[in-house]
Image 1 (cartoon, rainbow, N blue to C red):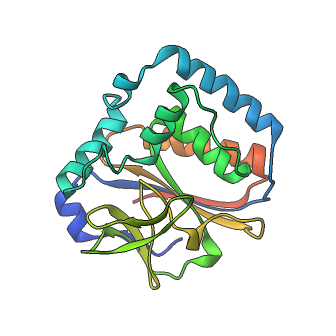
Image 2: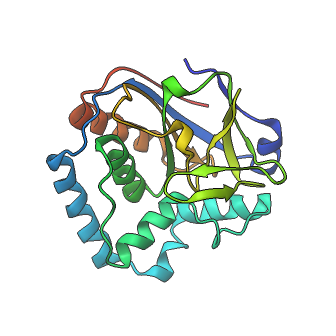
Length: 219
């Protein structure tokens, strides 16, 4: 099991916080067309059934936005990844094709509304905590440059912060050398369908990334 905990400070502010954790060996692929076909079907459905104003009111998105407000972070400026992905889809833009692992995470995120972190486990140093960003704290985010993570919910290990529901860091990103991953599905409400999202993630990992040695649990 991964040595990870939710910090007392974060639990005090966001008492319903849970993490659905999945650890797995995987096979990296630059592209999986079968997966992308499923993503295109889903994005077509989302575009035809949602508009931009509705996204912020989706239950799980709203719970994440409420958590950001409670922590003192403006959710419209630092949108969680699930909301940002859904807004991209509804605006008529394609999701980025990254690799099979990141594409799986984006697929599950837009279908479940959960923001999901996915990390190269071999780049992390336990113990790991889900905490609150410290004053003036920042890191180099994937595709975004340096971002201010003060008051954001953040994952950190012995080397410092490496991920948040808004954007993960380059330090822990998935690359062609990645062979073992840690996934964290973030539930701020404590009652949202976290286990269902975990099951769908595992099925996708098995189908599209030849996942094996899978461990999963909720904290």
